[in-house]
Amino acid sequence: MSNVTHDVIGVGAAIVDIIARVDDAVLDEQGLSKGAMTLVDEAGSAAIYDALGETTERSGGSGANTIAALGALGRSTAFIGKRRDDEFGDIFAHDIRATGTAFDVPAATTGEATARCLVMVTPDAERTMATYLGVSGDLGPDDINADAVSGAGILYLEGYLWDKPDAKDAFRRASEIAHGAGRKVALSLSDAFCVDRHRESFREIVAGEIDILFANESELLSLYETEDFDAAIEAVAKEVAIAAVTRGPDGAVIVSGDERIAVPAQPVAALVDTTGAGDLFAAGFLNGIATGQPLATCGAMGCAAANVVIQILGARCTDALKAKFAIEDWG
Image 1 (cartoon, rainbow, N blue to C red):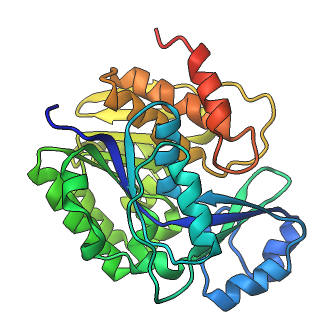
Image 2: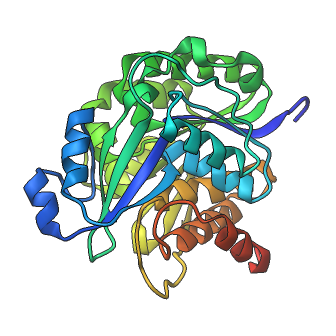
């Protein structure tokens, strides 16, 4: 592809993750749905934080995790997300730039604080999130760098930001620019509860603007309001060029036209934390797309990347990811 300045550019929430191990009782006490992402305000975030024990702070954000992993795999990457001129904003900027990713959005000097996500990991390794979107949710069309988007081979959009009207407009603006430049647009549905909240508008953008869709099984079933996986697969095949659907321990299914490719999950020595599994699958898959691999190999790369992250705490695994991909035989 000509005049490509970056392989992939992401648009998403600039978030710092605060990770804690908890028992299910903590989720019940805080009224949180296990395995889901719940939006909270700053006061709600503080209240939940006070109920946690020891915590670990790491840069996160679903789309940013994907972009950071792609950078670790050697792809040329850029990210667009909104942060404040505060401590968490500085942490986020430092960490994503450390992956080699271009992050040129100036810090906001007014508005809410930098976003943070309380990630609670239960003994079964399931992750439950309470997210304060802060200033990240104020991302709007004016924050979209047209030159950066038009110069990237793939635009990757994070579904979590769909909760904010300005961010929806930013997504549409970025998609319009990307397609105008002949680029591909990818979207992660992010969370089944997010799909439940915005099903109609998600259906609209998926059918009208998305070339590559990432979803897990529950998100896809929610999108098409069915409990029949095969029916959901048939529906998505009519609306996007490529769909990559993850199924946890059952691997993934890659859909393109009449093609259906089942990709097995890799064996897991120790399941530690499922945070970032979908983010890293998307990174591995897009790594394959960006390097011209067949869809089966893209799927295998996605499952390999997800395999790495579920065996550590948190969603950033640069060194382990590089080591994994260095020894894999993609055949």
